[in-house]
Length: 632
Image (cartoon, rainbow, N blue to C red; front, side):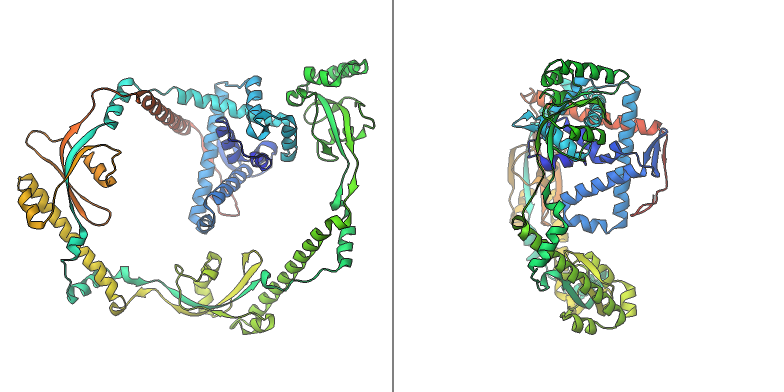
């Protein structure tokens, strides 16, 4: 992605709000959708406007990369689920469709960001700033690295800003009445008084007993809870490049590598040039020729660049560009820049992909070659890694051959490659040993083919120059464990269930007694007490379940009591009585913030409604795609 490339060279200023839409645009479609026009299959057609399979693939890869960075190893496990992969790809396609619908609406309404808006937005991008100021050298350098032209960046920025104009119009049209915000303000500061009796589960755990027959009955009724998952025992051979003996690289080999790759250790000639650019038009070349005549007459290149160049960013700096190497810019521009011989020499008018140019040479740096002594250690390290990789590859190939030629055992491969056979005890997919706790290993380990054929697996590559071969020794199917094996667990669970039933029953009895005004006698009998709740707010430091229940209860009316029973997270029960509700009559100083927040929420709902309406009225056709992952 373009902005990923920019950030690779940038050092962490916080992005401006305007970047939200721009990043979304690039994150979804990727730079490939802006700067290439692949002849690909069609993923979807939105009101006659095609979304190519290549655009979808770019967006899908970028979303995968984002999720991988966010979720880490957990995301690799998710990718093992074909259903998840399909849902992810569909989600990306739906986002692309929504973006296309918004773009079509922008075009229909003739929304168009001005040149000044585009210029200011680009100048404010943190990737192009240094010390909180726009830096032209940084701008030119990052554009060159990303492979996108200034003209393309301006077009992309204009598209994103125009889209932002529509979003601002929709979201900005939302509103909340002061009376609505006032009601929310008063409700948010409401206080409630009540009483709470907690019935701890531990009190009932200590009083319940369980007979052998009850334990057996619970075991029979909940047999699935005591099921042992399928398990295997395996033998495996692990090939790890880090365990291979390091080889010393001789000086002759280092010298030969240096001579064979001199270009890699050379710094090519560099040039710094300035240019005056005019966007393409029928009379742009003639206008530039007139400017060249003025240069010949003695006017300053720098001053003319500031006054006349359409590249306003370099123009502000006299047209000066960053140091360049041959072959890194547009071919026509590149050829003209390196044809200049003397400092101050000005080229003829040059037409490039981006416009028409006059180019002047500012300075040169001669080509030079780094001496062997300076790069020797790097070459030696590279060759050692290469030799280790080759040795690993050769052993991996031999491991594959031996595992295939002697499929019923790992002994031959272990003997020839001098690798230890590692044997495991029974394990399930949920408690596999750490060294092999990888879906790439567990999938074949629990496959029917491998155990039924009693053969070695193929070589399984684990990355980081690690590979292994497994052999399933024994298999144990999933089955309900015998009662004797799980009797303690059965009794523990059955006792907890019985205690919770008794706690629930007791809470019901207390609620009935409280409604009849007989709660004190009941509480004395059971050794429990009432906790007073005074002035409780939604933010009080109480059990969240208690607060939630208290604020959902109806206010007491007349002689009627408002009572509620709830289960707590630890299995305990609680009975609540609501005594009074105190709602402020005046609004607070938070009213403007609440009104603004609610307006923002309403604006977001309006935007979602707009998308729904655009989708409902649109002609959207999905096409069958042949993908590396799946078809839909």
